[in-house]
Amino acid sequence: MKKILLTSLLLLASCNRGGNDSVWDEQTTTSHYLDKAKNFFSRQKNDSKLVHSEDEFYGREEEFIPLRDEDLRTQAGNFAYTQPADLPLSSGKVPGHHGFAKPTGDMAALFRTVYFNTDDHVLTRDEYYGTLRNVARKVKAQPNLYVFVEGHCDERASESYNLALGTRRANFVRTQLIKAGVPQNRVYTVSLGKEKPAIPGHDRVTWAKNRRCEFKIYEKPTLVKNK
Image (cartoon, rainbow, N blue to C red; front, top):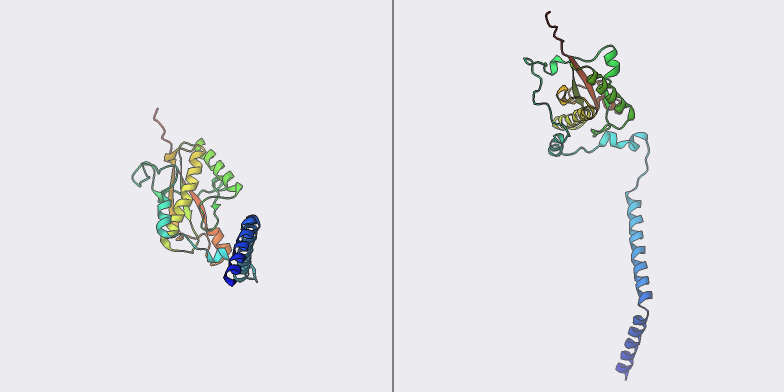
């Protein structure tokens, strides 16, 4: 008798559950998402921390995690325009990098240094793109003018990493000049990595001044034909 009664109760419970599948599903689904939400907020509470100073808020500047050197070296060659086949040589028509000089006078006001964010090779400020447009206009107007773009970095990370990052910065600037109409064979690039900082120091202000591209120029003498 007890066995028959127990079997009947089980069958009845099964029928009731089967007749309310939607309620059952809603209850289990709601319970599932409530558990997930509880776990999420519990994890957030454990991971969160108060910021006590400006340095902690700007921690990315001091504690950035650079890409792997081998990855950066691979990306260094990924730019739109290849370098000129006739790279400048001391004995050639155009001198090597040492033969280019820092612009002075009116040229200095035109060929202004542009600056980059940490671990970045793309310019982010409109004024820098304005500088590149002015440079492109000047170079296009003077067929005997050649430009070397120097890529520089701040002191952080390895030498090889910064050489690769400096290459990417210089190549980015060169690409923008070519897109603006400057002939490819009149714009060269070189990376100096972190070897030639603009100013010495070990703080955020110093680093910002050293993440840059500078211009060096060479004006080819105009040949005067004998009459």
